[in-house]
Length: 190
Image (cartoon, rainbow, N blue to C red; front, side, top):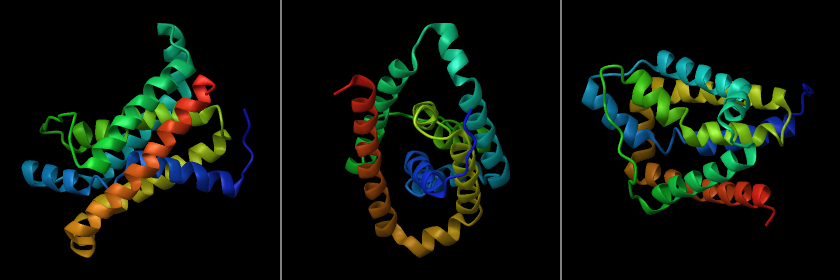
């Protein structure tokens, strides 16, 4: 287990997770969710999503071993999922349907919106490529970003405006698409 600090690696992993989590691109969805349920708890959503990410980072491989799926299989499936999510972001379409519940800060906000299958797949994929300490720090940085975005959601919405949110979502969609292609190529040998 490699635990050396490398700032460049931390920045790379942070940006990858930031693109996959896409909390800024999810602002319109989060605003709609907040209006539907009357409010969300930024602290609860942030810490639950972090717990999910850390749990999957450390026991995800064991779970896959138990059900007989290799990391490459999971990464390829995840790359296809990331590809679809990127298309949703770029084209402005919605393929998946989320449900709203009374515990909106946990479901669907913490999971699957913040710590969804794309994030979990990415964590397993980057675990083979990057230092564990870099991933842990990147998760913490992203959870802090998520917290502040949720905490100041109304101010961010006013600052960016509808056009700004749309542009950010499309830019991160393209980054996510490139990541999906990289994951697919890495694990298929193409």
